[in-house]
Structures are given as structure tokens and as C-alpha cells.
Image (cartoon, rainbow, N blue to C red):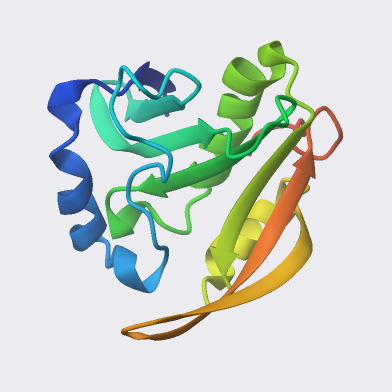
Length: 164
């Protein structure tokens, strides 16, 4: 694998709903684009990337500030095909993104929300050092969603372990 990133551009915006549908995203997560995205001009603090393996687009990852704390970001990630799931690709992508995008920015903490039923993702995040700091639920038209708020203190092990 030759994982790398490029910034999301305007012409990418129509891809995300297609990818979300392709992988059954509504059963896995709520946002297929960053929740703070308004426009490229108004979202200067947003770090949003297409994940590439060589030249193939395999997903998206973003880091967004949701509060005034400039030392923390919320992360969102998904791969765009189910045959990529369960192969360690997400773990590899997150480790690389933390090392190449987040660590140079002096970010102290990363947060993410993951649904309770998404065990594969929860195990991935836990293996990288994310820990549950809060359990929450919300009611939607399609039912109740229960999720974990997870936190990683950047710079601490084990996210810097040898890649598999």
C-alpha cells in the first residue's frame, strides 16, 4: 500500500454522498462530510483530505475544530468500499494522518464519535490508543443512536507502533 493524502477540492463534493450510500454509511455513522463545513472559504480551520492508495481514491479523513480549544480536533474518517473494511487500512491511514498532518500542528487531543454497534471501528480506534470518555445517545427519525465519544492524547503510545 502507498497511502497518502490530498486536500479535498470543490469537484470532490459530489463523491461523498455516493461513497456513503455505497458502504451503507447510514448504519455506521451520521456525517459523510465534516459537520462544520460550510464552504471552502468559510472553513479555513478544517483539515479535509481524500485518502489515496497510489492514485486510487479509497476514502476521506478530516480534522475539524468544534470549540475554542485550539489544541484539539474532532476526527472523521471512512473508506469508500466495504471490501477495504477489516484489513487494517483505516488503522494505517489514521496513524499516517496523525504523524503527517496532526502532530506538526501541535495538537494535544483528538476526539471522535463512534456508534456502539460499529465494533470493527471501535476496536480499530482502541488499538490506536483512543479511549471512551463519554457515552451518549440521540433520537432520530430512524430510531435511537447510541455512541461513544473517544479521545486520544496525541503523542502518546500506541498510535506510533510499528505498522502491520
